[in-house]
Image (cartoon, rainbow, N blue to C red; front, side, top):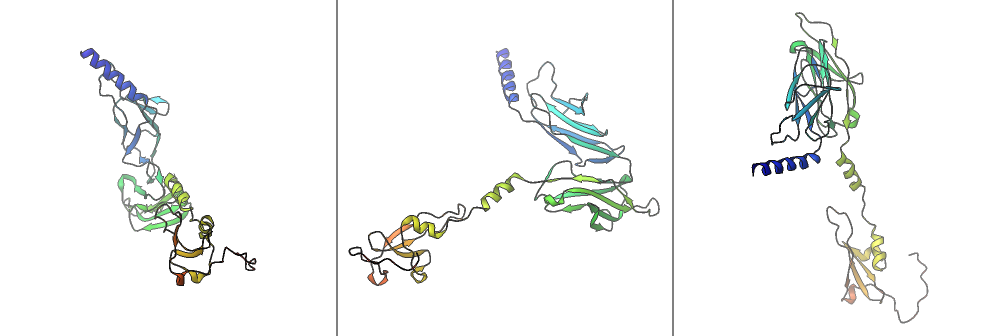
Amino acid sequence: MWALTALFLLVQSSGQAATLEKPILSLHPPWTTIFKGERVTLRCDGYHPVFLELRPINTLWYLGHLLLPSHKKSIEVQTPGIYRCQTRGAPVSDPIHLSVSNDWLILQVPYAAVFEGEPLVMRCRGWYDKVVYKLHYYHEDQAVRYFHSSTNYTVLQARASDSGRYQCSGTMRIPVESAPMFSSKVAVTVQVALFAASTGALSTRSQSPRSKSLKRTGARRLPPLAASGNGALGCNSQGRASLWIRRPPPLQLHKLQPSLQVTSRSPSESPQCPDRSSPSPPSQTPP
């Protein structure tokens, strides 16, 4: 019985692993650049089999093309390079590029992708977290923000135009105030969200012209005085006065519904329709 249960769990685990997506690799703290001597934590979130096998290797870690000896779900690193992880049966995760600096000043940007409409946060750090004074942030060599002392620069709703190379500068008291120092430039890319494109496609839809609705129903267009609200008076194919009512479009679909024909019973409110029994001379007015 135990052997059958173990075989069932093994088959089920293999079937789930065959359709797995690649794991998600995250960085804590979430900055791509650190000072020399600091350590950060990498975490690999993906499918981990519950069934214990003879050689339980749940996670594989890569630094470039080098296989790291750890098989834990999270590891601490301080070596610069490109990191990836892989869980059992799943493809390799997206990479994280970790940079290590020996400068007095560094500019830290998020490791994860930033999409349009999301906040973009940058952090200018001094060596050993010293306070940075007279702090400037630059975008493509143009100053975009000034702070008296250490403060993060935040773009509340990022746009594609916010992509580019950023840099920061400032002074530190070591022990007296130093000359202005500059960080290395860091590239930032703001990606376009997929739902924005679909929304734009929907926003380009326009309502059908009113003339197409009248042409489809066969009603004659009358002078503006004969139309009021969502209705218009006209004559049908039998020469009888009719009131054509257009339903208001729904809020989301933005389409005109088929018109409703309501026959007028009041002779005083009906338009003058031509007599179908006798021929009439052609009209000289344009349709």
